[in-house]
Amino acid sequence: MTRVFSGIQPSGVPTLGNYLGAIRNWVPMQDTHESIFCVVDLHAITQWQDPKELARQTREMAAALIACGLDPRRCILFIQSHVHAHARLAWIFNCVARIGWLNRMTQFKDKAGKDREAASSGLYVYPNLMAADILTYHASKVPVGDDQKQHLELANDIAQKFNHDYGVDFFPTIEPLIQGVAARVMSLRDGTRKMSKSDPSDQSRINLTDDHDTIALKIRRARTDSEPLPDHAAGLEGRAEARNLVGILAGITNTLPENVLREHGGKGFSEFKEVLVAALVAHLDPIRTEMARLLDDPAALDAELRLGADRAEAIAAPICARAEEIVGFLPRR
Image 1 (cartoon, rainbow, N blue to C red):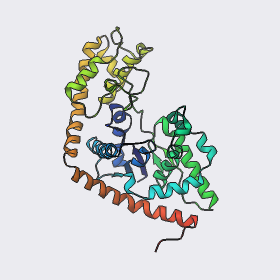
Image 2: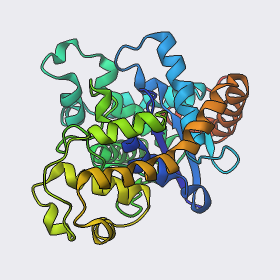
Image 3: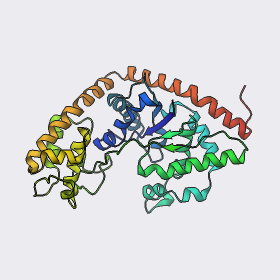
Image 4: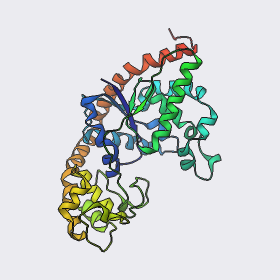
């Protein structure tokens, strides 16, 4: 089967947006692709992290992925820093990538903000590590969102330049993996902004660890307008918050927004929100419960992740070693 790679940062409890936009779409890939997924803690430290929080959030993210349906027996799931090939190949790619290429990366400009001189060099070369993450497995498919497509193009530029400079046909071309339309979940407080773990207001998002009462309170407080729901999609034009809530119900029930409007058109938001709360709780409560069970036994969770790292290393280490040999590094005997 085609090999797929994807990673997610341990930057806090996943939100409903992370789940509907990415994680849920990874689950069926376990049956159609050779799937490799990891928690990218090396990427996380491109910005300073409290060490204890990083460790806690890394384990928490791994538990969330398993609770959402990633089965360590059907895919390879591990912690990025546990497989040293990522860092080894990233250094080679630091020396292959050109400064001009990195200067065009818009995500660095967004994350560094106005004070770019104070940003870490790790944040600047972040895309080179992302390329190493993928290419040390010779993965040819990567599920990506719009914000990562530029990095994927850079990964291909790096692979092509490595192959050209050393006269080899070693690293493959990577293609984005598009599976249907990923749900784009927006803030519950502002329908024009993406739901985010970094938003200062916890009321802006649904966390996968939120219980029934918390979900109900957040949805009931979610920003809306005074008009009832329309019965057709055109009626959502200019109504960002209404579109968002309709999209959330469509995403969590695996249907189309048009079907939601056909069923609930004409309802006021107080009635519609109760339907949405019931659907969210029914879908997310098993995830929350399983995540809590996994975190109650960290030794067992860590053992699963070590097995995943061993399986990942069995693929990555020979590919990385061959890349080092191509470059001219002497092998360690």
